Length: 127
Ligand SMILES: [Zn+2]
Image (cartoon, rainbow, N blue to C red; front, side, top):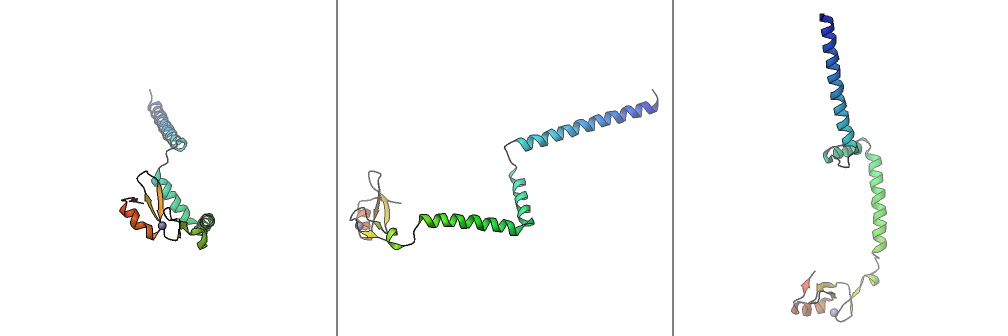
């Protein structure tokens, strides 16, 4: 064997080793990408980087989403006082401050201020 062939063989071996190493690294990366498990730290870093890159657009989307949700919530809780009044479970009077208790049968009872004392006397569990 001449020194040239030995060198060539060494270079070939080194190339083969490098190729296998590269393949292993690539397969690991591919597995990472395809798996459902996401590296949280990396995802967070990516998110913050994206947010810092375009703060205007991310803010706009946040505001849009927030307003949409706010509209939904507003739709479900009417502001007018009439519908907000709840009737007492004991005296059936409408009251704006109804306290909720659980009775001995596990039923939910909403009692007004006047009936709250009797609820406490009955040793109901407040919620
Ligand atoms: Zn009452």
